[in-house]
Length: 317
Image 1 (cartoon, rainbow, N blue to C red):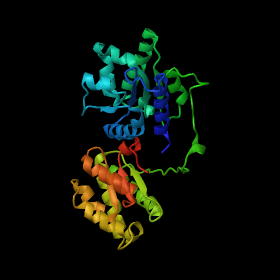
Image 2: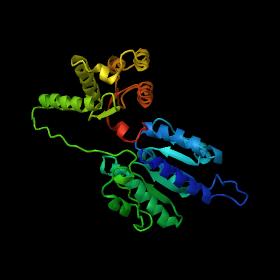
Image 3: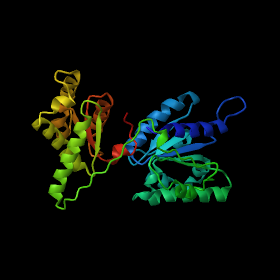
């Protein structure tokens, strides 16, 4: 990854450090930190990550999404709340939560380029309300925005009231741990079916170039397309006799994939998994998604076709 999570942890530690008493203990009732993540899957992952890293300081981390709500007592006992933009927007709208809002000393907005998305107005609301709160109470709340894909970072910096000389940081491609090569393939076919077929053929050629060397991630636009594209890539590999290039005959991965495929709920995934291909989208059962993430991370799945959920930062090596 780009190391955004590490930056988030550093800002959390800085805020925790500001509330250390003279005896070295941390005043756990004096502050709250909010981490805003775009998806429930990402929220769950971040809760696990932060809980582990902040445990030595006695910091309690909880999630707040549409699936889980916190009582007033739980909110009071929690120092770091990881939530979706909509949920935090609802919580800060209520007049009865003034005391809670006053204790928020740090707001981290992950994937802040989603300002350009349909959920952008919710993020704008959060920022505007926080700035208004700071102006009204004269109590400082730090806002940190993180993004790995944001060309107009200066505009977003202006929205967050960032001092461009001191608080705006931009890291270009020279900082990437893995160099990135970009190439564009133009498809001029107008008819949808023929266009889809041609795009699949081009995708297969590109996937085949990496077969046996690297694992491949293919991003598509919809959940339905993950199954269609994944099945096409598997069928093309079988038809052209290229399967051994993806998965070696008699290898341990084949056995593992065949065994794991038996317990999969999603029919499309169950069909293509034994050959080293997999799909991933938010409509799949949590168990299936976790299985795919683990099998890809362990190097067993060679080609993974996914929607934007994985591009939004769910952790995959």
